[in-house]
Structure formats: C-alpha cells, structure tokens
Image (tube, rainbow, N blue to C red):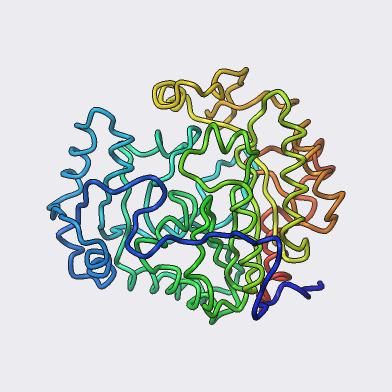
Length: 398
C-alpha cells in the first residue's frame, strides 16, 4: 500500500485546511454549551485526573455521596435531557472499561471492543439513541485511569488483533477540552502492535493529537452526514467542511483516518447530497490513508420517537415508514436500505476501489444485494476489518 503523503509533514500548508480552527482555549466549555452544574463523586476526588479537571475549571462543585444524587437532580429538572447535557459528573468506572460491541446475533456485527471512558454527549443530535438508552442520561467522565490502563495492558497481551473504540457511549473527542485522556491513550497504544484505537467524533477538537507519539496505532474517525442533516439534526456539532479539514490535518500528522455514515437519513434529494459528501472526502484525504468507511441507515428504539417529537419539534425523521427489525429497532424498509447502500458503495468504489466499506448491523440479504457478497464468505466482517487495520496501522499477527 502506498502511504506516501500520509506521513507527518513539517511546515504543512495546504488549501484543504486553510481556515481550519481547532480547539478553543483550555478551560473553555465546548460548543455553545456551558456546564451549569458540576458534581464529583466522593470516591473520585483524589484521582489525579479529577484534581486536574477541578483545577482547570474553576467553578463551584458539589460532592456526591452516590450517583443517585446526580440522577435525582437531573430527573427532577423540567427538561431532564437538556439538564443532563449541562451537568458534568466526575466519577470512577466501577465496572469494566473494555466491553464487547453491543451488537445482536440477528445482524452482522463489526466485532470491535468499546473502551468505556464516559457517557452521554454535550452535542445535541435529534437521532441520538443515548437520549433513550440511559435512564436518565448523565454526562459523566471516568477518572480512574490507572484501572483503565491495566485493562488495556491485559488486552495488549492477547494474541488476537483488537479494534478498540471510545465513541459508543459518548463522543470520543468532546473530552479533549476537559481532560487530557488522548495524551495518555495514544502513546499507550503506540507502544504495541496488537491493537488499534479508534477515536470517533463530530468535532474538530484535535489539537492535543498533534505531536503525540502514535506510530499509526490510533485511527481518527469522523461521523459524516449531508449539510442538511448536520444543520437540521446535529446541533452544536462541527460543520461538514470543518470535519473534513480536521481529517486532512490529522492525516498530515501521520494518523490513519476513517469515516462513518451513520445514520444515513432518507429524504427527497438525499442521494445527490450523499454523493457530494462522498466526493468531498477524497478532496481532503488520500484514499490510501482511509482504513474503512461504514454505512448504516437511521434506526431507533420506539421510545426515542416521543423524545424527538418533544425536543426537536421541527424534525421529520421519525415520521417516515418504518418496519420493526429483529432487534426491536424501527428501520427503513429493506428495499430502501439496499438501494441507498448499493449507490453509496458504488460512489465510494468509483473513486477508491480498494477501501473497505461495511454496513452497520445488517443481514446477509442486504450485504449480498448491496455489496455483492456476504462477510462470512470472506472470513467474517471482523476478519475483514482486522486485515485492514493490519495493513494501514502496522499491526502484527504472531
């Protein structure tokens, strides 16, 4: 694979990233949102990461004897979800940091592992399942990083390749302005050759990644959508152009990148708009440096519909025709999913035929009709993604 142009470039100047604006000054809250209430777990006060955060954000805080105090504060609010986005709970993870992907056996799962660094998000997307997944949702950050590193070290000792992501229960990079977790994780992953770390975001908060020793063992990923969806459904997120410029900057720093179209939302004119987004990707980054691109259509648990109706009264996305999937989530009818998948794969492959493109949580029929094969005929989806990580990130199989 030709990685020329994917290495770090000194004095990097490129029209692709002109006008790029990175992270705000340290100590500023992200986006248009300010934390109005700060709790800290009484059992987390002495952790170095907690002390650093409290020193950085000089604002009053309340020590919580239990998580129930935080839950009650949010639940008693007139608008609990909005209050949750303005309430930060600094605490410790009392369970496992590394978890299996919460996929279902009914659909093909990518088989990646979740690095559970925190929950919820300060951005505000109408379709976000976390609004209905947590009861109540809480913006919390785990600070017992020594325990986290112990689990990662155990993972590194396994013989199998591991793909680890931090963007399942939160956005990976919103914490960059509050904590320095990437400066711990990225160098840690750089020192081994069995696993890759994927940081997934809708932000441009990449400043801390510059200059870190990464050895291409960290993939920086962006969730992408059309300009219309970003404007109407993804409040407080970075623009499409800003995300792509940030990807170009990370590529200039030597990081491999990837992209995720999830959720793909169907509306009149969406096909042409998704085609333009795909074409834009390759105006900013080299196809050789893209580890994978995933695609998944809008799907939601029934409870989310009433939340969208209340919090996003102008949103029309939950009012189309849907069918209940085998996992209990509402989905577009299968022929509609197959049609948009087939077209998006074709648009990608027309420009970059060698990029690994995969579908998020779909069955064999969808794969066969949209991609022309089923993953099990190629060793399984997890094996396909592992191989791409091996090629792009220099992993070794012993």
